Length: 387
Image (cartoon, rainbow, N blue to C red; front, side):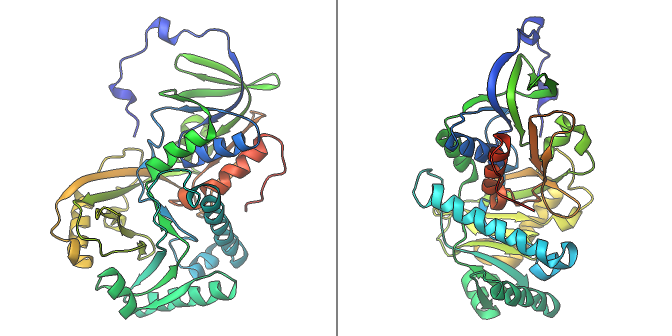
């Protein structure tokens, strides 16, 4: 997603650095996690600096479907088989905590105008016996574990979605959808942070009892640093290369139509996802399975192959929206990890710097709680436990 190659080189004067400016806490990255960190830092009495290479929500935070979900896209029983039942339950608990905290702190109070629609979420399965059994077994386990949800059978799901290929779904009434870019900008305003857009950090290094933060045309000496670059974290922290890798997701938006689709829809393990905004705009994303080997890397540009697959999918799965003109097509870069869990820790060899990255497409579902954890950790407070 970088546009560096199209920019002219800096002059000697613009690149020249003065003595490092002394600052308090610096957050590197202006996406959901970085802005959530800034919000919690401010609540704890520390107004931070935010350094963003492009503009707020430039990356995945402003390119996703805007889902505030509880849990993961894949069925719980499969996740438990991969990372263990205790860790899988912990993931669901953290995402539920994230939803409750975000709603109580920001959304339900109307503190940010981001078109929040609390109409619930659907984790829907295709009408295939094996997949339906897996999803229904997940519903039973999660219900017994105390998660508030409903099971929707095929007739209910098809009536509520207008999608003829679905067979059943888990419905969570407290979830919803929002405008992620407006949310990010609103969270930045609530934080009161000193925001420096167009400020790409090139290096972090220890400097006595502080952290040296160097970039194009600036040089800071910060008491502490939080790195929240998600997929782009290896560009600043090379030790995380191979542990966090970029994966592309693609979407489209149509012209508005009569509103018939409520809630946010995750379909077929989240490989497809759809929602309709309050103005009738229909959003559709996914179809990455059509070209898994190609949908990697940092280039956030839509491709004819995946966009064509989205067009075909819209015809087959959402016939009510099939003939609407497409107003915009786009892509974004997600960050994946081997076990599907985010990474969080101390920056190697840079005391006073912490990071979080690798949210596997669940940045909105985890980012507010992770921001709280990072803020507490950066300030040396008891931090809310994660995994």
